Length: 336
Picture 1 (tube, one colour):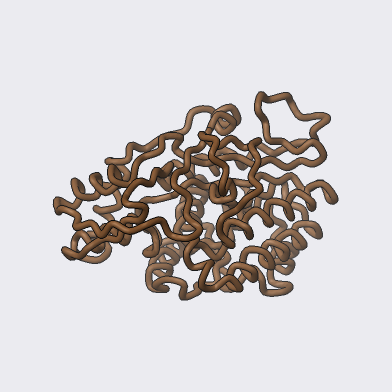
Picture 2 (spheres, rainbow, N blue to C red):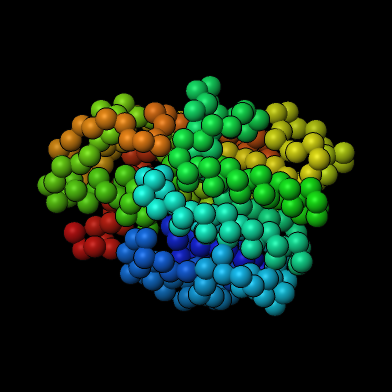
């Protein structure tokens, strides 16, 4: 099987992707800085589960550390690279933009430089649906304009797409960019809505509901996302002049580079999402209705036609089932 580098391996998505890769028989080198953006004990618990699996090697370090990635690439000769390490969170980017500059831009630069010197078969890098920004044409398709980002987080992710495209063009690095749509599920991040709502509802506390609850999100269950990523590993973008023609393909006209939406393609209103949590917890939510926060968008909705064309059908977990799985995990992990 293949040797895969997963950056951000102890993170929410990185943990699930690494686990699925190991279960499929791949060797995984997992890099993570174990930062304190949220509870490091949760990251350590994910990491402990990965370390118990055969084929996993952990490396502690930050992607922006000069020379770290170049050394790993030279030592291991990776077949595939899945770059998930990033400073996440729209709201935190307003308070601490330098964290995003260093991790998301400098870190991506270090990764691209390492890949230039030691090219893998395929580079797969995480972006975000937030890059669509002020675009109001729904559902979002990969070939739509994404020029007006509304948060610095989104701006750094769009910059990462552009940086990766330039390296794909200059050095022939086959690259796929993923635009994630509101990922949720077990082992999720404490700063995300599902985690915060579940914790507050079980404690009988108020939940802050922005835009009066009139938000719609394309909630994507984490196992569905991981299944799609593993399916796309071998779907390596070719040079445009030799690649097969695919309708509405986002393949670059000058590079082996493609961007793909990873979403559920079924937007759900925030109120409906909260109802699913109420059902799963067996408790009513006490809502504190608030206006829209800076940097947020009112709704997201992924067109996943290209994804399905490339890998066939992918599971789309029902919102009630997915939320119930998270609540079961939360109760078990925290002993609630």
